[in-house]
Image (cartoon, rainbow over all chains, first blue to last red; front, top):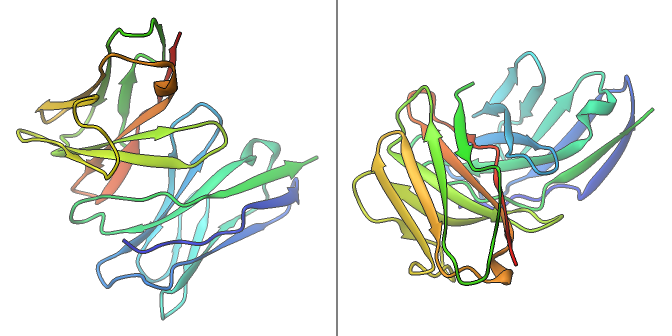
Length: 111
Length: 115
């Protein structure tokens, strides 16, 4: 399974756009890129998933360059409630579904 | 998104007892479920893959006799921590794969405290 590398922590202010980049140099052809959000003492919550180019949903956008060796999660206009740990995962969700978590990025949103 | 229910959310037990944690996919069938554990301020660590109708596949270093996994139906997997010790205290999280949309959904977690 491809290993991912993310910044350990990021700070932002309310109303700003936050971009978290994840590196996955060894991504395989069948691998999808999935981002999860986790609050303390809760299970991870699915945010967005993509394979290539750009994906957008009601909460975030995911940008994936052509070589797929990295991806960027974009959170528009963050609020205090977006303070959480964000995990980038790479895996073949269509096959075994097995996902290995990296260290994640702790996002702290300040007023 | 799909709903995965995990129960109990919190359990306190005495050392030497066994604890069972249930993971249910409420609105979809899951042939594969996964069990993770998480220590404070650490990432999730995959323990095992639970396969409906067959034996679980354990990650390296995870004792299969210690952490018993049963996946008897397409909507239920259970993790039993046998003869629990204080070092087993952790946050246990399950996830279920919804094959149709090729996504994993996670339960809310179970905080196990062994006294």
